[in-house]
Length: 446
Image (cartoon, rainbow, N blue to C red):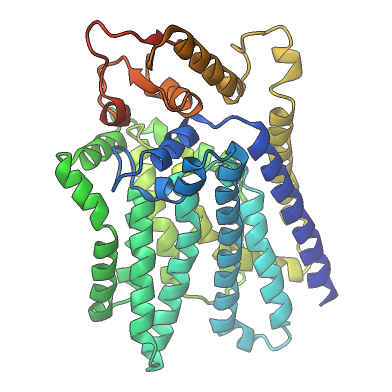
């Protein structure tokens, strides 16, 4: 028991430290291109949007409408990150409780295994470098991450309720429907992990109830797209398919996955199999199905590293048990080395942000061409200057070359209109349209 207490204590200290780092960065860094875009969702409230479902805008609408500082908006992804850790740890605890392995090994301290597995779940998430990006900046994936372990928990509970003829089965199916609906409102790819549910639960009558509730919840998306000629679905299909398919991109995708999420989940999965820990193997479908889909999409260049974050969250509570079993049995060297290596990468990333770039590279680079994070600085000041110029010359709009420049410009220059001067139709065309012939506008370039 002392082993688990010491392990939990150090893990908790790490959780607190990382939380403070996230909060600090949240207040000192400008919003990234995607963050600003989704924050504008909160300003321009609608049933849905061109490139994503509406939840990412709805959830930050109040602080955005009230003009809250960027750091306040970033409290939302931080809370979601902590919730992801808590819910995922609950999944690992449930798997230990339901496994026959603990009864087949009477000398095993079940409580110690549960506690260490829960904290290993947290460590898998805390030691994944890209998870910190989603903990600081609110993206649709940040919303989806805590919903996946809830989806898994409800699946486990429904299966147990059916097998034990419990009376709460209908309530569980309804709760699952709510989670599925929230996933659909968060991101279109939320359907990928949900595909694992019918593989695990063959009781279609209850599943139809869940699907009905989910369909009601996502009806705003259908309504908005019906009014806009289904442009979201057309865009997502084109965006997901990418360009010409190339097999070499699969290797790059897998390499990026190990760099951004680390080897801990894969090693933990190997260890749980090696230790012959019995659990519901169908739960692996929550990881395998979406990961395989994203892998195929990567062949066409239509998959980004952070898109798989919910799938790794699904694997974390399973892998954590394998890591915990090996830890209890005294096989710690490899696990310690992996944790140390991944946390070192995270520390280097935080140092880069604290220093505003790589000092010896950026010291003679005043305009930031060599600075990999220059994009996170200066937009607030540029927005204030644009507002002053617009007021001075009595001009009501700004113009930029593309949407990546438009999102920060529109956020930090509110309430000025921002026109995007390209041929690509996007959300800014819906919000602001195109400048009229003969009208005045201040042009901003990089």
